Length: 208
Length: 79
Image (cartoon, rainbow over all chains, first blue to last red; front, side):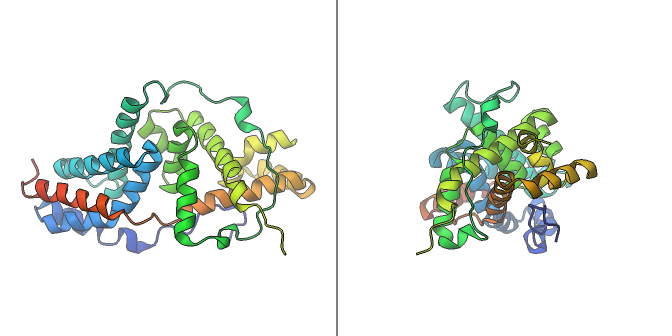
Protein backbone atom coordinates (compact mmCIF):
# COMPACT_ATOMS: atom_id res chain seq x y z
CA UNK A 1 0.00 0.00 0.00
CA UNK A 2 1.19 3.48 -0.79
CA UNK A 3 2.39 4.85 2.56
CA UNK A 4 1.32 8.38 1.64
CA UNK A 5 -2.19 7.38 0.69
CA UNK A 6 -4.93 8.73 2.93
CA UNK A 7 -7.81 7.17 1.07
CA UNK A 8 -9.35 3.90 2.12
CA UNK A 9 -9.96 1.26 -0.46
CA UNK A 10 -12.75 2.38 -2.79
CA UNK A 11 -16.21 2.04 -1.30
CA UNK A 12 -17.11 -1.63 -1.34
CA UNK A 13 -19.19 -2.65 -4.33
CA UNK A 14 -22.09 -3.41 -2.00
CA UNK A 15 -22.76 0.29 -1.43
CA UNK A 16 -23.54 0.96 -5.09
CA UNK A 17 -24.53 -2.58 -5.96
CA UNK A 18 -27.98 -2.68 -7.44
CA UNK A 19 -28.30 1.11 -7.23
CA UNK A 20 -28.97 1.35 -10.97
CA UNK A 21 -31.68 -1.30 -10.82
CA UNK A 22 -33.36 0.36 -7.84
CA UNK A 23 -33.29 3.75 -9.56
CA UNK A 24 -34.78 2.28 -12.74
CA UNK A 25 -37.53 0.60 -10.70
CA UNK A 26 -38.20 3.80 -8.75
CA UNK A 27 -38.42 5.77 -12.00
CA UNK A 28 -40.97 3.26 -13.23
CA UNK A 29 -43.08 4.04 -10.17
CA UNK A 30 -41.97 1.34 -7.73
CA UNK A 31 -42.22 3.13 -4.39
CA UNK A 32 -40.57 0.27 -2.52
CA UNK A 33 -37.48 0.66 -4.67
CA UNK A 34 -37.32 4.34 -3.75
CA UNK A 35 -37.79 3.52 -0.07
CA UNK A 36 -34.92 1.08 -0.37
CA UNK A 37 -32.71 3.85 -1.79
CA UNK A 38 -33.69 6.11 1.10
CA UNK A 39 -32.94 3.42 3.69
CA UNK A 40 -29.61 2.80 2.04
CA UNK A 41 -28.47 6.42 2.13
CA UNK A 42 -30.37 8.10 4.98
CA UNK A 43 -27.51 7.87 7.48
CA UNK A 44 -24.97 9.29 5.08
CA UNK A 45 -27.27 12.06 3.91
CA UNK A 46 -28.12 13.01 7.49
CA UNK A 47 -24.42 13.14 8.39
CA UNK A 48 -23.72 15.31 5.35
CA UNK A 49 -26.61 17.61 6.27
CA UNK A 50 -25.24 17.82 9.83
CA UNK A 51 -21.79 18.66 8.48
CA UNK A 52 -23.24 21.51 6.43
CA UNK A 53 -25.80 22.98 8.81
CA UNK A 54 -24.05 22.04 12.06
CA UNK A 55 -27.44 21.73 13.66
CA UNK A 56 -29.63 18.66 14.16
CA UNK A 57 -32.96 20.33 13.50
CA UNK A 58 -31.77 21.97 10.28
CA UNK A 59 -30.08 18.77 9.19
CA UNK A 60 -33.36 16.89 9.56
CA UNK A 61 -35.19 19.46 7.40
CA UNK A 62 -32.44 19.36 4.81
CA UNK A 63 -32.43 15.57 4.66
CA UNK A 64 -36.22 15.37 4.31
CA UNK A 65 -36.28 18.04 1.65
CA UNK A 66 -33.42 16.38 -0.26
CA UNK A 67 -35.17 13.00 -0.38
CA UNK A 68 -38.54 14.51 -1.28
CA UNK A 69 -36.97 16.64 -4.02
CA UNK A 70 -35.03 13.71 -5.40
CA UNK A 71 -38.30 11.79 -5.66
CA UNK A 72 -40.09 14.65 -7.38
CA UNK A 73 -37.22 15.12 -9.83
CA UNK A 74 -36.42 11.48 -10.41
CA UNK A 75 -37.47 11.76 -14.03
CA UNK A 76 -34.72 14.38 -14.54
CA UNK A 77 -32.00 12.08 -13.25
CA UNK A 78 -30.16 11.00 -16.37
CA UNK A 79 -27.89 8.40 -14.85
CA UNK A 80 -24.70 10.07 -16.06
CA UNK A 81 -23.47 10.09 -12.44
CA UNK A 82 -24.27 7.79 -9.56
CA UNK A 83 -27.66 8.38 -7.98
CA UNK A 84 -25.88 8.94 -4.68
CA UNK A 85 -23.72 11.73 -6.14
CA UNK A 86 -26.86 13.37 -7.53
CA UNK A 87 -28.46 13.10 -4.08
CA UNK A 88 -25.37 14.69 -2.52
CA UNK A 89 -25.71 17.65 -4.89
CA UNK A 90 -29.36 18.15 -3.92
CA UNK A 91 -28.47 17.88 -0.23
CA UNK A 92 -25.66 20.43 -0.54
CA UNK A 93 -27.95 22.89 -2.30
CA UNK A 94 -30.64 22.49 0.34
CA UNK A 95 -28.03 22.71 3.11
CA UNK A 96 -26.48 25.90 1.77
CA UNK A 97 -29.89 27.52 1.44
CA UNK A 98 -30.66 26.63 5.03
CA UNK A 99 -27.29 27.85 6.24
CA UNK A 100 -27.59 31.18 4.43
CA UNK A 101 -31.02 31.71 5.87
CA UNK A 102 -29.90 30.80 9.38
CA UNK A 103 -26.60 32.65 9.32
CA UNK A 104 -26.72 35.38 6.70
CA UNK A 105 -23.30 36.64 5.69
CA UNK A 106 -21.42 33.73 7.19
CA UNK A 107 -21.24 31.52 4.16
CA UNK A 108 -18.90 33.01 1.66
CA UNK A 109 -18.39 30.90 -1.36
CA UNK A 110 -16.78 33.44 -3.59
CA UNK A 111 -14.49 35.56 -1.49
CA UNK A 112 -11.19 34.84 0.11
CA UNK A 113 -11.77 34.05 3.75
CA UNK A 114 -8.53 32.27 4.47
CA UNK A 115 -5.85 33.87 6.58
CA UNK A 116 -2.21 33.01 7.10
CA UNK A 117 -3.04 32.23 10.71
CA UNK A 118 -5.04 29.20 9.53
CA UNK A 119 -1.76 27.55 8.66
CA UNK A 120 -0.15 27.99 12.09
CA UNK A 121 0.73 24.70 13.69
CA UNK A 122 0.74 24.62 17.45
CA UNK A 123 0.04 21.05 18.43
CA UNK A 124 2.99 18.77 17.93
CA UNK A 125 2.12 15.59 19.73
CA UNK A 126 2.25 11.96 18.74
CA UNK A 127 -1.09 10.14 18.47
CA UNK A 128 0.33 6.63 18.37
CA UNK A 129 -0.57 4.13 15.65
CA UNK A 130 -4.33 3.76 16.27
CA UNK A 131 -5.61 6.66 18.36
CA UNK A 132 -9.23 5.62 17.77
CA UNK A 133 -8.82 2.36 19.66
CA UNK A 134 -9.32 4.18 22.98
CA UNK A 135 -12.91 4.97 22.03
CA UNK A 136 -16.07 2.97 21.44
CA UNK A 137 -17.52 3.34 17.95
CA UNK A 138 -20.43 5.52 19.08
CA UNK A 139 -18.13 7.74 21.15
CA UNK A 140 -15.81 8.13 18.18
CA UNK A 141 -18.76 9.11 15.95
CA UNK A 142 -19.79 11.69 18.53
CA UNK A 143 -16.29 13.18 18.76
CA UNK A 144 -15.86 13.40 14.99
CA UNK A 145 -19.27 15.04 14.60
CA UNK A 146 -18.67 17.48 17.43
CA UNK A 147 -15.28 18.51 16.10
CA UNK A 148 -16.40 19.06 12.50
CA UNK A 149 -19.41 21.03 13.74
CA UNK A 150 -17.03 23.32 15.57
CA UNK A 151 -15.03 24.56 12.59
CA UNK A 152 -15.94 27.30 10.13
CA UNK A 153 -18.65 25.78 7.89
CA UNK A 154 -16.92 27.23 4.82
CA UNK A 155 -14.05 24.85 5.51
CA UNK A 156 -16.14 22.00 6.93
CA UNK A 157 -18.30 21.70 3.80
CA UNK A 158 -15.26 21.34 1.56
CA UNK A 159 -13.80 18.69 3.87
CA UNK A 160 -17.12 16.82 3.98
CA UNK A 161 -17.36 16.68 0.19
CA UNK A 162 -13.71 15.92 -0.56
CA UNK A 163 -12.62 13.67 2.29
CA UNK A 164 -15.86 12.13 3.56
CA UNK A 165 -17.95 11.89 0.39
CA UNK A 166 -14.82 11.34 -1.71
CA UNK A 167 -15.83 13.80 -4.45
CA UNK A 168 -13.07 15.15 -6.68
CA UNK A 169 -11.70 18.68 -6.36
CA UNK A 170 -13.44 19.56 -9.63
CA UNK A 171 -16.83 18.16 -8.51
CA UNK A 172 -16.55 19.97 -5.18
CA UNK A 173 -15.66 23.24 -6.92
CA UNK A 174 -18.60 22.89 -9.28
CA UNK A 175 -21.16 22.02 -6.60
CA UNK A 176 -20.05 24.85 -4.32
CA UNK A 177 -19.42 27.41 -7.06
CA UNK A 178 -15.81 27.82 -5.93
CA UNK A 179 -12.59 27.97 -7.91
CA UNK A 180 -10.28 24.96 -7.77
CA UNK A 181 -7.56 26.87 -5.85
CA UNK A 182 -10.21 27.93 -3.30
CA UNK A 183 -11.29 24.30 -2.80
CA UNK A 184 -7.67 23.21 -2.32
CA UNK A 185 -6.95 26.03 0.07
CA UNK A 186 -10.06 25.40 2.16
CA UNK A 187 -9.45 21.67 2.23
CA UNK A 188 -5.97 22.20 3.63
CA UNK A 189 -7.28 24.58 6.27
CA UNK A 190 -10.12 22.24 7.20
CA UNK A 191 -7.72 19.33 7.61
CA UNK A 192 -5.39 21.38 9.81
CA UNK A 193 -8.23 22.71 11.96
CA UNK A 194 -9.69 19.25 12.47
CA UNK A 195 -6.25 17.86 13.27
CA UNK A 196 -5.74 20.61 15.80
CA UNK A 197 -9.09 19.94 17.51
CA UNK A 198 -8.73 16.16 17.45
CA UNK A 199 -5.31 16.44 19.04
CA UNK A 200 -6.84 16.85 22.45
CA UNK A 201 -8.62 13.50 22.14
CA UNK A 202 -5.97 11.50 20.37
CA UNK A 203 -2.59 12.65 21.65
CA UNK A 204 -0.74 9.71 23.03
CA UNK A 205 -1.62 9.02 26.61
CA UNK A 206 1.06 8.45 29.18
CA UNK A 207 1.38 4.75 29.78
CA UNK A 208 0.89 3.91 33.43
CA UNK B 1 12.34 23.14 1.60
CA UNK B 2 11.34 24.70 4.93
CA UNK B 3 8.70 23.60 7.46
CA UNK B 4 6.35 26.28 6.18
CA UNK B 5 6.60 24.90 2.64
CA UNK B 6 5.70 21.45 3.95
CA UNK B 7 2.42 22.78 5.33
CA UNK B 8 1.59 24.40 2.00
CA UNK B 9 2.35 21.15 0.16
CA UNK B 10 0.65 18.96 2.76
CA UNK B 11 -2.62 18.25 0.89
CA UNK B 12 -0.91 17.59 -2.43
CA UNK B 13 1.52 15.27 -0.70
CA UNK B 14 -1.15 13.37 1.26
CA UNK B 15 -3.37 13.06 -1.81
CA UNK B 16 -0.40 11.84 -3.82
CA UNK B 17 -1.06 14.67 -6.29
CA UNK B 18 2.26 16.52 -6.05
CA UNK B 19 4.72 15.78 -8.82
CA UNK B 20 7.60 13.38 -8.26
CA UNK B 21 10.25 15.99 -7.59
CA UNK B 22 8.11 17.74 -5.01
CA UNK B 23 7.20 14.45 -3.33
CA UNK B 24 10.89 13.62 -3.06
CA UNK B 25 11.67 17.03 -1.59
CA UNK B 26 8.94 16.60 1.02
CA UNK B 27 10.23 13.12 1.85
CA UNK B 28 13.74 14.47 2.25
CA UNK B 29 12.56 17.18 4.62
CA UNK B 30 10.47 14.70 6.62
CA UNK B 31 13.39 12.37 7.10
CA UNK B 32 15.15 15.16 8.99
CA UNK B 33 12.28 16.95 10.74
CA UNK B 34 10.44 15.27 13.58
CA UNK B 35 7.92 18.12 13.94
CA UNK B 36 6.81 17.96 10.31
CA UNK B 37 6.65 14.17 10.50
CA UNK B 38 4.19 14.53 13.40
CA UNK B 39 2.06 17.05 11.51
CA UNK B 40 1.95 14.85 8.40
CA UNK B 41 1.19 11.73 10.42
CA UNK B 42 -1.60 13.26 12.53
CA UNK B 43 -3.15 15.00 9.51
CA UNK B 44 -3.16 11.70 7.65
CA UNK B 45 -4.84 10.05 10.63
CA UNK B 46 -7.41 12.86 10.82
CA UNK B 47 -8.44 12.24 7.22
CA UNK B 48 -8.39 8.50 7.73
CA UNK B 49 -10.65 8.72 10.80
CA UNK B 50 -13.29 10.74 8.96
CA UNK B 51 -12.92 8.82 5.74
CA UNK B 52 -13.47 5.47 7.44
CA UNK B 53 -16.03 6.43 10.04
CA UNK B 54 -19.46 4.93 9.61
CA UNK B 55 -22.33 7.39 9.90
CA UNK B 56 -24.23 6.99 13.14
CA UNK B 57 -27.72 5.46 12.94
CA UNK B 58 -30.47 8.05 12.59
CA UNK B 59 -32.11 8.92 15.89
CA UNK B 60 -35.45 7.05 16.02
CA UNK B 61 -37.57 10.20 16.06
CA UNK B 62 -35.71 11.68 13.06
CA UNK B 63 -36.07 8.43 11.10
CA UNK B 64 -39.75 8.17 12.00
CA UNK B 65 -40.50 11.66 10.73
CA UNK B 66 -38.52 11.10 7.52
CA UNK B 67 -40.41 7.94 6.65
CA UNK B 68 -43.74 9.52 7.54
CA UNK B 69 -43.01 12.44 5.19
CA UNK B 70 -41.98 9.99 2.47
CA UNK B 71 -45.07 7.89 2.94
CA UNK B 72 -47.24 10.96 2.41
CA UNK B 73 -45.32 11.92 -0.71
CA UNK B 74 -44.98 8.43 -2.18
CA UNK B 75 -48.72 7.97 -2.23
CA UNK B 76 -48.64 10.43 -5.13
CA UNK B 77 -46.71 9.57 -8.30
CA UNK B 78 -43.65 11.69 -9.14
CA UNK B 79 -44.83 14.88 -10.78
